[in-house]
Amino acid sequence: MKNSMAYLTLSILILSVSIAGCYGTNKLHEGAELSKEKVAIIKNIPRMPNRTNKEVIIQSVDGRKSGVYDAAVEVLPGKHELEIYCMLRKETFFKTSVYQNVATIQIIVEAGKEYNLDAQIDNQSCLPEMKEAKK
Image 1 (cartoon, rainbow, N blue to C red):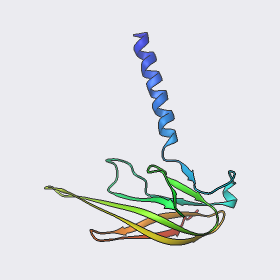
Image 2: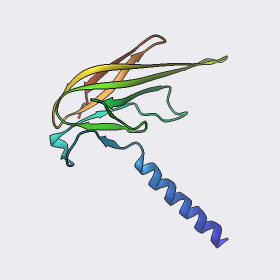
Image 3: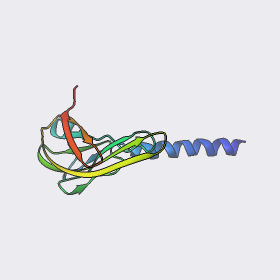
Image 4: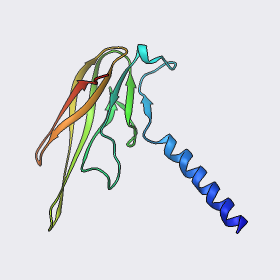
């Protein structure tokens, strides 16, 4: 009994540490860590398997790859090119349809600001849009 409790506790601890590493902010700029006042944060609609019908994920910024499970990316202020993956799942009683597309957009971001990434998605296109987050 004691061994199974220890095993359960250890399993929960390992799972918690693993999850903490996911869905974080990925630094996609060169150099040292910078304060939030010196970078811009762009938030995805992250991949959460079986929990969401829409994903809008930054695949890369200026050619630098981002992680699939990143909730956000941190970039330097200025102009950037984002490659965006879009997925929309539509479920009906009879079937599930999945529409996927990739789009590239040019953006300009300011230091100290956070932005939310979204997209209009249909079966033919992905039209990403980014808005400054309300504080």
